[in-house]
Image (cartoon, rainbow over all chains, first blue to last red):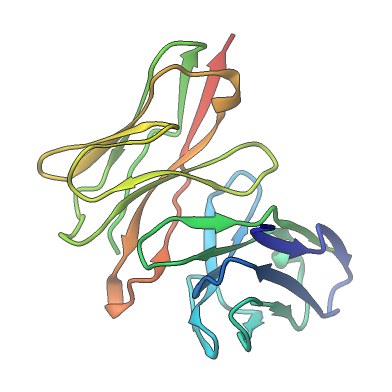
Length: 112
Length: 113
């Protein structure tokens, strides 16, 4: 069981570039989440999904897009990268509402 | 949103018990109390959760006040590997959505050898 897998682990982008952060889980979880963590801060929810085809905004969705075409995958898209999006991004999944989440190891993104 | 308040930092000695407090005075009747921890350069890791009764697992114990306005995470014997940021989180049910987990800044636990 791989759990929650995030790729890439590190990435440097130039301002205005686009990229997709990949997240996959092999636990057949319905609920998936994207968080960002700025240095020295807690995690902030970007987007979440309660099942394939269903997504919703979290606290800080501006500048990001998501899709959920399958139960396993929940990619996060940055269309026009900005320095303010420099952060560590974590993907998480969970089986049942209110139960524990499993987190990936994160993607460290720098926008220069 | 139901909020939690935790001390910014705490210090403990190795092999001693640690009590990490969390206040959540606006908790609603159906909010679960979750605890996660984040070791340096890693993603958060589930520790424990509960609703009303005290809970125990292999990692820790969770003591919930009778009025549910506060809770305490108990590490029975701290080790150096327990040094991490500990987050106390309520399942967010605002706006009819009960799927979110909102993280605060947490408590940075330092364990001294």
